[in-house]
Image 1 (spheres, protein in one colour):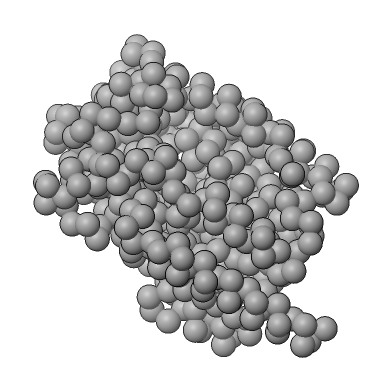
Image 2: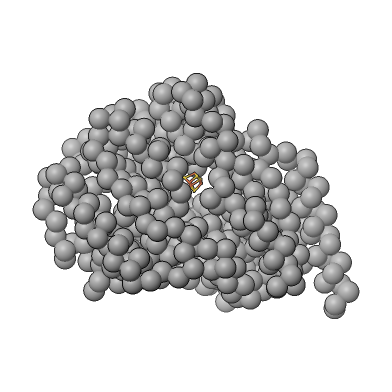
Length: 406
Ligand code: SF4
């Protein structure tokens, strides 16, 4: 059975990352997943990402134990299940971090930072914790849903980055150092370029990495970007995958079709989902979810402006037109035969099937699309039997269509 050997190193790195929170002398910042991690690391903060904790609650299928705690506080079941699971875990004082890493819970923050480039939910979520823990909070609220990111947008967001410096200085006890920020950004730029190369190895057939593998191997680019550790990890992973490409070793022996996955993973169902596609000889090779941590614009010579551009031009923050152009390029680069849109009940922001995009894509690009209903963490919104039938039928249709044109 195909295995990515770097997974061992990945496990070690992620374990060390979490165990690092046992050192209570370090200053801690909480940051949203596509928030300004590089700026925070340049002040010496260790960075905790509540969304990463939310994904852990989803993947360990414990989210369902915690969501009702948030519901009691008045949080609706239809809003972000990362938020409801994470706040519920905090209220219940239980987390898989206890069992896996011997931590009492996520580390106590000295500063909380958010960027609403992905959604407004993160602002509410982080404000809940800031109020409950009496912790300072700062945020970036960029313009949303853009066709193009203009100079005016960059100037606006860049000014918001700079405005966070006094709060970072106060909470960290360190003076802002532009050279340290440049160095951190350069490390992040290098790691993100390597991560992109890792993902793009899947343009090959056979592909050495699937979407499901990528959701695991993206750990360091989310929580450790701006560190040498992340850069070294993706150097090693890329080397392994490139060797597999040259030896024609991939995660699937017979690739009958190539699939793009749109939207969030269903964290509690990654393994059965991956097996379902493998059994049907379908290679899920691309997604914009994993690409969300590819930041082409980073440039240490213009650290504020390039950070503003990189974090504002992310896929989730773009207009439907801009998204469709990005998808058209991915379909071409990865030679996609069909697209599956995950309509995640509690994340409208990362569900692109609600305003006619699958139909438009199908018409414009001439490839079939399928929408499946589910959720990132709340498995009450996912019907495995129904989705399996839909996916199998969809894959059969692709296979028959391909057979006709052969
Ligand atoms: S993008 Fe979706 S899943 Fe992520 S924090 Fe926002 S609402 Fe939650």
